[in-house]
Image (cartoon, rainbow, N blue to C red; front, side):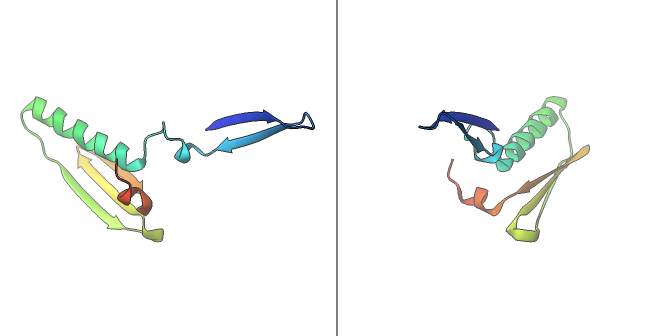
Length: 87
């Protein structure tokens, strides 16, 4: 989260708080999921063998719950608007 402090004509501080999800330097949930997937594939290739499964389901609000199973399970809830943003 970032906070900007600006002075107005009244010399009272004005605070503007940017939610972390709106901060362009913060990775989106989709980016985090793709990085994890790449990491698991690379790690498995390094070992020479691995088993990996990916499951996705639509949940409340049009969000996608992506589950990556590679020894452990990793879940990512991806907002629908992240699916259509070109990176």
